[in-house]
Image (cartoon, rainbow, N blue to C red; front, side, top):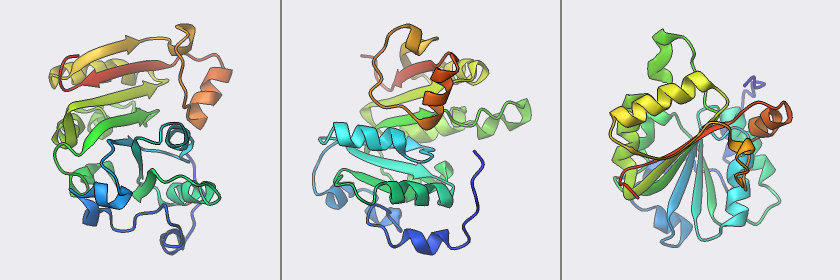
Length: 213
């Protein structure tokens, strides 16, 4: 995703209530931030935040945290939230490599990975968010009933992810090779997803869990 550089994005972010400047201070105590004990779902690589915002508006009994490593995209997301009244959402500027700085073991119930960079060259496979190194990290913050929900338009990334998920002994509860031809009801869609659907491209989805359903 090409994003216009905003030189003072870091300072601008501090003006918005949905932005968490020091998320590590909430590690192990996100319930205090949200003022409830509701489960936490996170999206890694939230882009402009459309997907997560839709979920937060729909399910007020779940707390949503959007994670994005590009500051300018976090800024776009908080600006889009400026005139909303959502109490169950927070946004973080963070590289996924540092998730353990922000969440304790068992603190997250669900991780969304939507249209992540496929890093198609084999020498870059460790950068893929479904590489075994990342999956080990996800396991370290997920609850016992935790899940990973993956959607992508890249068949190569999808099949790579299925192999890595199996290798790390997650349970694959659902594997869908053409999501919208199967008439699944997806309440929330990303901007990329809407674009790909309009182009007739297949969307691949899987749901993996720590424990078997």
